[in-house]
Length: 244
Ligand SMILES: NC(=O)c1ccc[n+]([C@@H]2O[C@H](COP(=O)([O-])OP(=O)(O)OC[C@H]3O[C@@H](n4cnc5c(N)ncnc54)[C@H](O)[C@@H]3O)[C@@H](O)[C@H]2O)c1
Image (cartoon, rainbow, N blue to C red; front, side, top):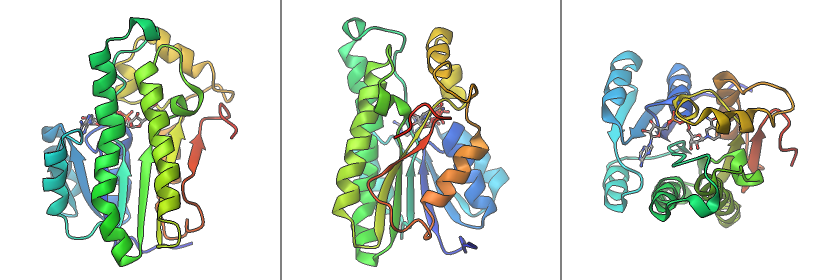
């Protein structure tokens, strides 16, 4: 189905790298207006010079309430929010070896960040009777990856939030869904201990990582007007690892 994206105002968090960056590039190609938000500002400015005037950088730490309020208050309308910002924190550690400060930091970004940004956009979407919120969760939140307590538990919290928000907005024209990818080669994965990456990739029945093209194609569908009868759901992108 052909979709006119030129009317759509899209916010992507975690825009400066990996999945978020690929999502921004795709929506710019489709003609949408994209606000790329990230705590890391200089890559956003480089993206602006290559992607053109439909791309607007937003320097913001999503774990900081005041920064999220200030940045979202200056946006006119938001049709689509994709929450891709996330961190792994320390990995390859048993739960009893974790540092509580690190666990807290991961929750602040992965859960609270997605909570704060979605809380900021939902009232406007509901008032206009249209919107798409997509939280990028992880298969770790469904299955639990040994060695990744903070990451897995924070992504499970995101999946729980998606179920709640998805039901709360049902019938308003707004949908809230999540996406649970397995491993997709990005700077986040490159920064992890090789043993931890091996643990995750050997669990994929297709025997390979997902590609950014596969990720972007699924995101494009989930946040399109055509995806209108699914809310509160966590879409799978795991090469067969999670079949539910
Ligand atoms: N790459 C994978 O295999 C994979 C698999 C499953 C889920 N995910 C999820 O997808 C999302 C994107 O991952 P990625 O691989 O692209 O990672 P990445 O590290 O390449 O990019 C993440 C981006 O988020 C930004 N960010 C981090 N903390 C932030 C904060 N407090 N405020 C604003 N921006 C912040 C970083 O600066 C970075 O640009 C994450 O939520 C991740 O958990 C990734």
